Image (tube, rainbow, N blue to C red; front, side, top):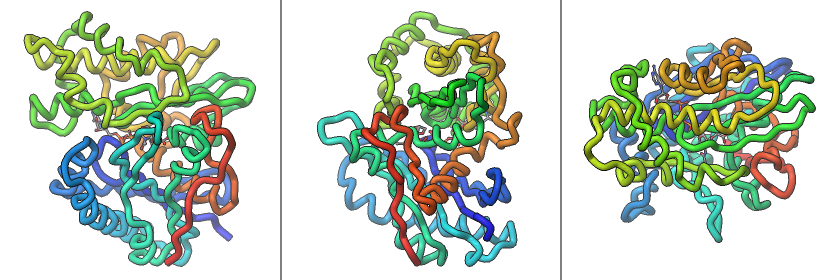
Length: 362
Ligand SMILES: Nc1ncnc2c1ncn2[C@@H]1O[C@H](COP(=O)(O)OP(=O)(O)OP(=O)(O)O)[C@@H](O)[C@H]1O
Ligand SMILES: CC(=O)N[C@H]1[C@@H]2OC[C@@H](O2)[C@@H](O)[C@@H]1O[C@H](C)C(=O)O
């Protein structure tokens, strides 16, 4: 019986929905993929819900419904494109859309939108979702969860390797030669660069790093940004847009800086906040995935900071960098079906390894 799973990820950059159809019968194999950009109004609403605001409960209801309809439309598109019938698919692993993540407060919580009963009803496929909260119930951060998949796919016995996901937020997995794994969120990925270029150039992101390349580094601002207490904390740790957002940046500016110089500095800051955490002896290869892999200035900064290690796209290991997270949620759905733990306690800080997710039947 083939092990066919769909993975759905819509991440903190809020650019849209990544969907993959994966075959896990033997080695993870990406059969088909689909990127569904959010309709502009939905994107605006999600962006605003990702930061504290007014009347959130009333606003969440219809937004969650619309988001779920988009997930279902994406599943239909993916299956049509790949020419597969829904009956062949074991399950959909759906991450949902994070709008709040507060794992370290006295009453920790995390919130991912998505009406999974509706998604099962609309697609006719079992859905596995709510991956983060079991880990948090056992004292974990509930994030990052992709390291278990990174380990399954990228680890090689006897080699120290690292995997870096640079999405809205960045997270690392350190795959140790002895088979153990550590990792955590390192802070902003592209989110602050996206916010700044959108404010000054009305573009959703700094395509090909053009804006960053125009500016020069502001060393004082760089030090100031790196002095945030988040970067002094040791892992397990995780973060989100409710912490690293435009006001966080703006309150550290004098107002005299040239916008391109701020962009260049944000790029270096992002690279440094990642590279500072990749401290493994004899680290020879760093595999990058997530949208940040397409930002040439960021990649060049990382390479400069991490030499002699080689900074490569995850595609060099046969996994397209744009689909790693969606693949991971398909893989976590399979882990649920096989009742295998999906969290890594050394990464999230949970007291035990847990099977993650809840099943929603059509
Ligand atoms: N050509 C490009 N040039 C520069 N940056 C790019 C390019 N393509 C994508 N990006 C960056 O990648 C981001 C999207 O990355 P990705 O889809 O991995 O994020 P995400 O999955 O939503 O976030 P997270 O992993 O935090 O949940 C965009 O917002 C943009 O900043
Ligand atoms: C709460 C939440 O949605 N966190 C995301 C976010 O985006 C990247 C980083 O921060 C990571 O911790 C996580 O996503 C990936 C999929 C993860 O759980 O591994």
